[in-house]
Image 1 (cartoon, rainbow, N blue to C red):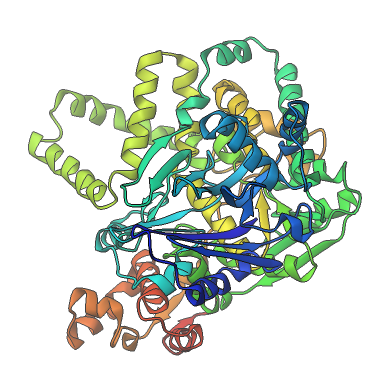
Image 2: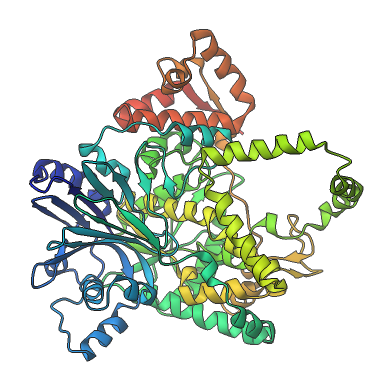
Length: 628
């Protein structure tokens, strides 16, 4: 895990300012505090900050050049199967001067080419390959978007970076007003493509971008989530006995945990949330590592899961390291979170506890941790995708309304058009980020006309897109803010392909003994809980998913002075009277209140370049959290 940056000048005789490259390296230092490398030459500047996890020696520092000095690689991530790739290359006569995955990746790209190499990679990555002879850059981002990669493409220069803030020495940041409008209008925030900044985009997961000095860039996909759908696989899984399927998932998950735990030359720990996903990952990891370091963020109050986390630690005979998260932390940590998140994080309130627990992890000199992200998406663990028998009475009452709507008797065509217009306007603001993905999946469903795809695969594919990208960005940005890498065993490619094609009946199952009030008599993630039963006591393997809610934001009160001389006031041209009106009214809308506060903090960090200390002082003066 590292920080990467590059600048390509379209004027060939321009050499990037080395002092600016040094400033960029400092802005990325938290992502790679162990060492940094800078390359400046005619037309090109490259920066790499390194968090050393494999081959800790200086020989593996980046930018990493081939022996002939033509190709350079700046790379962020981990390739878990790099040893197998290296062995294949060695059988073909290639020799290596390091034991890193960096050199293996570069050699594969040079030998087999980008398109041939990418399908063979198992891991998380964003990287750029520079060809000095051709003056070209090839940028790549992994299938899920686990590693970030931001781009600014102008007529004069092409920039790329792991974090937007690293572009500060080279750009004047200006807001993308459509993204802001979309965010306030109801969208959670962009996760690919456009950002909150004008002319800065995020390379989409599973995408290759190529650019040559003096020419326009072009992109091409190498992977889409719909590629996980496999009719043959689905038919095979449909005919397996439940125990056979449980065995298969256990085998793949256990191997994924083993690889992600052991592909490192430093200790790897694990996050312990208290839920079944992280608990299973921890229990499996403990079979390979008897002194596994585990960490928990205890959100004090009704959201606390400390009891379950402690119970798991005791069951595994491990010491639980805990950081307590208080109401005030959700205000005080906001500037730090937004600085690294890059835009308001309303959809990811867990960013605060993840940042705080990452700092705890760093203090224990652990550089990487296993996380349970991806399980709910693959095995349908979200409450809203599981039947709720308590709502059936509402569905029954709604039958007549649905029939009337079908015949066109309930809503006029004019009302229907208004609904569609509302959706289209919101879609226009966020450039149809979610709409197009969902349409692609729905088209796949129509083409295959398969019941298994309709009931299970489409739900998982949709969850693996927009929602998961936001969670992965949260884990990456908050972990790397404290120089800690997150790893995701549930997102092993073979395991995800299997999980996506598992029949719905093995993910969500009617169960008279399931008394989860969110979906009474229905067990979510049934197949995964069956695996967990082999490693965990029943109270943990069948523990209900607890939705995360930040009550501190709901109970916060905002002073009307907060909007004086504010970005929000400037953006909307608000008078003193209008600012007071806004402050008075938003107290009844926790969502809008929180979004406006975070938007204001974002603007002061990125647009006004204010210090985090002054921003925090403003927050503490104008926002208070009332006691429960």
